[in-house]
Length: 275
Image (cartoon, rainbow, N blue to C red; front, side, top):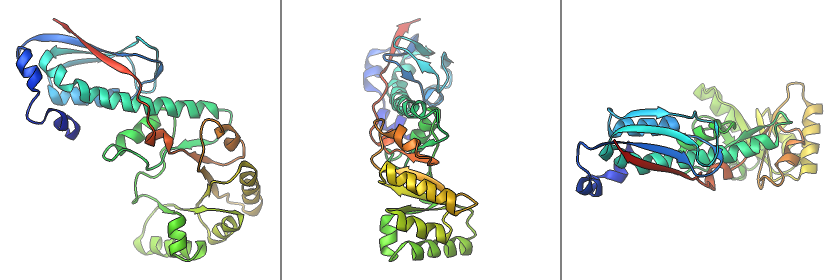
């Protein structure tokens, strides 16, 4: 609703000036390039907010592949309502489709492994739910949603706490006192910090900017050292150029910020026709 209000504010004065209030018509949303479509359900909701009497007929489902020219959705009703919702609908669908498409590239690249692709909190302000939903649509998995649903100890927390061991110990005490049912994950910058994190009982260990060779050492050490295997996440400077090599080290997760912080929208268009 906020996105819609941001656009129309006091009213769509162009549509009010040029379109008869009761003029009926239809619109088609089509892909202008190949990709994975996302945000169809969001688009349906936006159109319904514009005018609950609009008839919306999706021709694709979120997560499906589309090719240039493919019909994604039809909408029929008052032209004024269609035009008011057009840009907001396309903004959501294009961004979400772009994220879903990029995510699918990564997922397919490492499909021969058991590694899961994760998103991050590097999302557009106010759009985190939609950005993370688009990652799921593309076949990826969500990392923590925000600051409240996981204890994630990063380098600044470690330095401010004077080391990994006190940082994890404080986190464990806090979790117990607050009765929180959340995981504790800690970033590590080398194998020595990895060993400290394991000794303290971290649930997940984030290997930050490790080279593939050192990452393999970390995986081997964890497999050898503990019966209840600690989960390992790789992060930092990972892209399509090296994601396969990283996945083949044996980590459990790979988190990739570019899925949501460097979005290339999928090109979609909406064209109207008179009834």
